[in-house]
Amino acid sequence: MSQALQSLLDLLDLEQIERDIFRGRSRSAVVPRVFGGQVAAQALVAAGRTVPEDRLAHSLHAYFLRAGDPGAPIVYTVDRIRDGRSFTTRRVVAVQHGQPIFHLSASFQTYEEGMEHQADMPASPDPETLPTAEETLPRYAELFREPGVLERLLEAREAVDLRYVDAPPFATVGEAREPRSQVWFRTNGKLDEFTADPLLHVCLATYVSDMTLLDSILLAHGRGGWAVGDVVGASLDHAMWFHRPFRADEWLLYDQESPSASGGRGLGQARIYTRDGRLAISVIQEGVVRVPR
Image 1 (cartoon, rainbow, N blue to C red):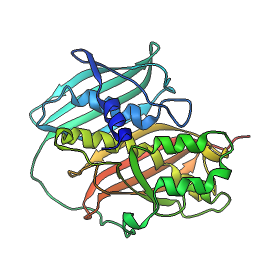
Image 2 (cartoon, helix red, strand yellow; image 1 turned 180 degrees about the horizontal axis):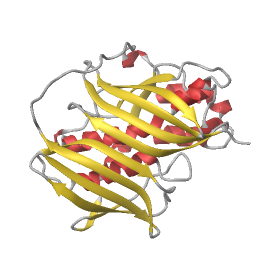
Image 3 (cartoon, rainbow, N blue to C red; image 1 turned 180 degrees about the vertical axis):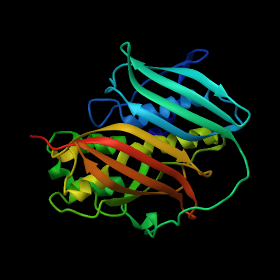
Image 4 (cartoon, one colour; image 1 turned 90 degrees about the vertical axis):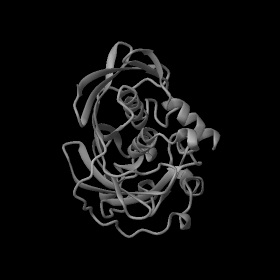
């Protein structure tokens, strides 16, 4: 296991300070605010700590309310909304400096047999044939206007092996493309038997899900994003549905597209497949996407 992955696992190991109150810390961020995937994953950890082990996360719905301060701890308060025979519902509020910065509702379910169907996995090259982030990002170093952006991008990706199928948005500024993108990802190292908890894999996928989902919006308009300074953006809300078991340390295909952008906002939607073609997760996110004036 890489040191970066161990640091991420430590980040998700919240401190319990009361029965339903947890405290988390932040890691250095690419931008001067807490990474949205981090607070979403930590909130799901807090919710899951109050749920019986036989109930698995099947969905989450969240709103990003305020920018988080990466230099301050985050307190997560869990509200035990309902414990039914099959489903358990939790609400989590993340607080910093006395104000809520994030709100999450999550639902958990006991395993059941049921009807089965899924959308087919789209075509994609094998992840081993694609360059790593360490190989891809430095090629575009001259495009990043702000000093230190490349270094912060690489640091943010150290715990995750994330590989673009096609060129990322900042590589094709000015060239409008189909509003669709694909990345393969997995943790940068195997998770041993002591980290086999299904909730951990769900939380790790939640963490990664906020990294690239809005890229397809940028592609449609030939924009490179905040990294090259031609777009100001932030996540507004986030929803995920966990359909089938998966492991975050095995390759997952993140197939993303944008059906709409308007009013200073853009919508991204995606499906995450296991390498053998099982639809594991569906994701939808809306974000602020503004062109600086």
